[in-house]
Length: 331
Image (cartoon, rainbow, N blue to C red; front, side):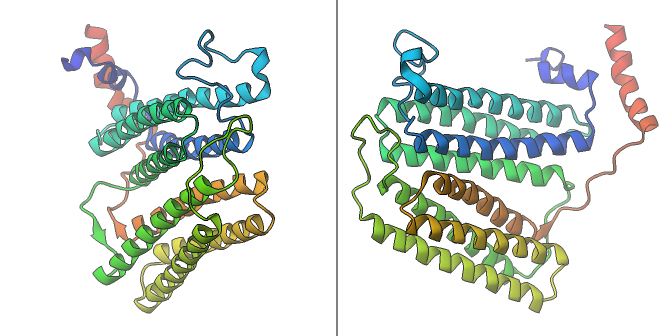
């Protein structure tokens, strides 16, 4: 498609978003990625997983829930509709990143990656319904949402920094320790997903939903062991950063992660010893997102790509927009 016919180029010719707007749009993607995880958890915890028994319509004869389906149909359908809100937010981020001058292709690519992840996870969600809440598909649905959150956090970080070649702020062994922390946290989240798949919250009370055939106590113990590993690695990284006199930013991010991790552990223990009440399980899912955001922020803080170019003055913005205005008037 010629540039003159590209809708994104047409927008870029007429609108120059500020760097602040691009950052806020990227952050909105992070927020919506968390919201979609929490609301998806609410669907399961309210036994609304099959509130709409088919997909992509709610019933064979209706796109929306019928009165006979009750509150469960409304909850499940609302979660489906939130996917369109998420698409809209990601769309704004893509358009803003594309229209911003100078053009930063890395931001645009990260935005499109989010769009395709949303689309693919929507299909996985449909398969989840069509397979009667198969726990393996449900788990993959959550992990795909975590992948979306990962890309959203990276885009948010890239929107806040420059485009210089990455420069390590710490020695290579310290960055390797950061990698180990990220991988251990990822494994912790995966095992937590298995705990959910073998636990009592199947997602629908009216149907005998298949569960992962594992002893929930044993898999929970493995999850607890991994919590201890991640906690130990977080403390170790903090001491290492202090020992090598690293910049204040990475150490501050590690402290933030430690605080989130301790709060998440507390919620998990209270949840386990109280037979997993729905409200605490939902809080634990939110905590899972916050832990993952925190560990990504730790890892991304260990390198630097320079400062983002300063926001242009109003006069500078007018000067930047003048060629686009002239081009538009000559058409």
